[in-house]
Amino acid sequence: MRGTFWVIEIINLHKSFNNHHVLCGANLRVERGETMVVIGGSGSGKSVLIKHVIGLLTPDEGSVVVDGVDISHLREKDLNEFRKKYGMLFQAAALFDSLTVWENVGFGLMQHTSLSKDEIWEIAKRKLEMVGLKGNEDLMPSELSGGMRKRVGLARAIAMEPEIILYDEPTTGLDPIMADAINDLIVEMKKRLNVTAIAITHDMVSAYKIGDRIAMLYDGKILEVGTPDEIKKSANPVVQQFITGSSVGPIRTV
Amino acid sequence: MFTKTITYIGRRTIDFTAEVGRGFIMFGHTLSWSIRPPFNLRNIFQQMEAIGVNSLPVVVIMAMFTGMVLAIQTYTGFKRFNAENFMGTVVALSITRELGPVLTGLIVAGRAGAAMAAELGTMRVTEQIDALVTLATNPIKYLVVPRFLAGFLMLPLLTAVADFIGIIGGYLIAVHLLDANPVIYIRMTTKYVELNDIYGGLLKAGVFGIIISTVSCYKGFYTQGGAEGVGKATTGAVVLSMMLVLIANYFLAALLFR
Image 1 (cartoon, each protein chain N blue to C red):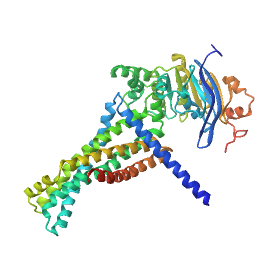
Image 2 (image 1 turned 180 degrees about the vertical axis):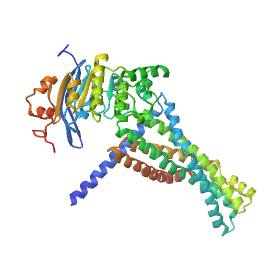
Image 3 (image 1 turned 60 degrees about the vertical axis):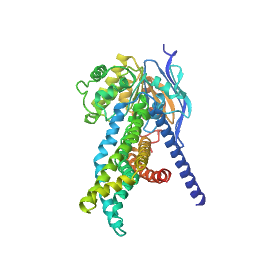
Image 4 (image 1 turned 120 degrees about the horizontal axis):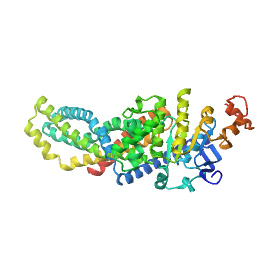
């Protein structure tokens, strides 16, 4: 399959906000079943990039093609059909704080299926078990720690059995051990559910661990794409500076 | 200096026009989603509780004291030309036509409007609204429509309560404190207050409900910039909906009660 079929194609993506050109012709292809990690500095447009993939933002120019369909120009109704194939984990989990943990996990099922409340509760319970949160179904999001919130967010993202999962900085704001636990979960999700995933992060430990391939976003473009090993050996000084985390190099720090 | 001023005025004009346009577009979407099934009854009832039931104590106290103070003021005023008998009429007309709907509107704008803007604003800045979208759920339908419908339905109901309580408050003070004749007081109330006065007031209240919920949801929905942004959105929602309630009140009064 490699090289013949691309599940997500980002083509020449441009986006600006208030005259600030964030993405200037980003191109990226993600294969079916792989986990693509997009790395880049804070404010480099990683979030903007991933939000285009699920239609939260519309490109100024260029397109996002998923399974052969250009989703950036779909009507909302058709786009929503597409979104049911997705799960997204937000940076701060973005749990609905007026709903309990299990209602959060079952939200998509409640909105889009005719399953009964009991059936949805069962599914939510199973998904929560998968992320190691058995027995917390009836808590409110405000009662959870940061790591637990991310896990619930992950359970919510996988509740509808998505084909594509988007991770927005999955390990940011967690202690190293919790971050590693989340990384393990992401790897496990890929194995168990056989999903295609895009993760954005600036945490290199996480990038190496979860990524099949890594893409570096710099100056609004994808600078380099490669396997973790290829990226580690990259000759590009920008990539080297970023992955080694040095303040000295071509990347401007101010 | 000159070009700077012109630029400033131009930019503010464009921003203002864009914002008004965006507001009306959102209002249009809200209307069209309001009549399309499925109806999220749970959310609608929740909002009706938040806007209506939870505002009830404040509205009751407000109406009671407004009716009471109206009685005192009309008594002292009308006594000067021996027209105390008209107290009941004046109290009832003032309350049903103006004070009931307007004060209820202002209270709901301060209570429920602020709550709506703060809640939606927080949901915006914590990406909960984005999360709704990623779960293939239209946030206007899920968040704004229930608040809109609840505002539109509950404001007239609250106003009806305020009218009733206000008139009772006026009666109590007039009869028990100012020694008005209860029979005359009631007769003067029922004789001169027409159903149209009450309906007009309730209709105004319905419009206020639309204004408050639309403005507050709009402000919350388009919040930018973290906790500070939520604060600004909340203040903006309350100030703007109060302004619009008062302005709309004038035009509705001019239209309805000529």
